[in-house]
Length: 99
Image (cartoon, rainbow, N blue to C red; front, side, top):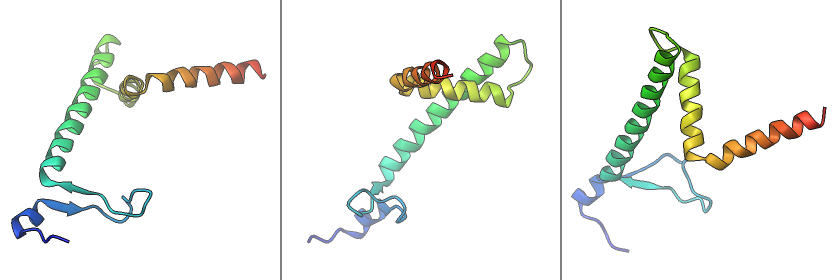
């Protein structure tokens, strides 16, 4: 087993034990990876909030409501998982046909 230099060790942080993979090992992210992940998440949240603002403006509102933010978040989720939204529609149709 090789030993890392102190400066290299500073660039790695172990995440808490609740963030383990299926083999029970802890994940570790470098400082650089954490910075990139933070930037990506900030951009995603900013896009979602911009979408919520547009939804509110299109509805003639002066400010965003919780419902506008929820709609924007649903759109974002559907963008990441387009098949999931199709499955949800199928579930609704299946429930309606069983009534």
